[in-house]
Amino acid sequence: MNQRFDLSVPYRLAELEPGMAVPVETFLDWIDTQEGKYEYDRGTIGMMVRVSRNHAKLSGNFAYLLMQALDGRGFDVLTEAFGVHTKNSVRFPDVLVQEQETDGRALASKAPLLIVEVLSPSSLYADHVVKRDEYLDLPTLQVYVVADPNTAKLTVWERADGGAFPDAPNVVEGLEATLNLRALGLSLALGGLYRGVSFPPPAP
Image (cartoon, rainbow, N blue to C red; front, side, top):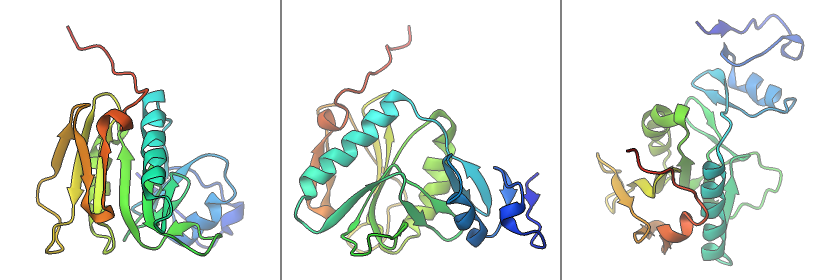
């Protein structure tokens, strides 16, 4: 059961920890004092998971190739230390793209266009269901991508011309395939996105 935060105790003196339910303002103040990585998960403090080499390579490749493709076009490509405020949470996606921001001290995206989450073993449900619902509710978001770090497979929700997201995602898989991002006017080859990622051997 989640512990409730006692508003009568000054939060800087309280022993906050993952699983505690706190106001979002308290979380945002508290996280600035922490060395670890946390997110605000529907009202409670959540600890972000450690990631594998494949996870790090894949998210790094996404950021690098997006920066190359969008260079000089007025976009920011930002990584998981930069936040996104959803209706009930504060998330830190692996990669996001937004229109270029002039406030260099901003701590979160006001208008993300593309969000990429790379799967971890413990994040399958969160990335495919919980975060999907939160992200697709953002009015500026055009594309949400969930990337599998152990096989060349992307699950993609892209806003249609009519403004709505489809009921079912588009699955793009195989190193010869291409991720087409119409909203950004670019395409990324999965062979490049998965460069250096070591796939596990197939099960016998």
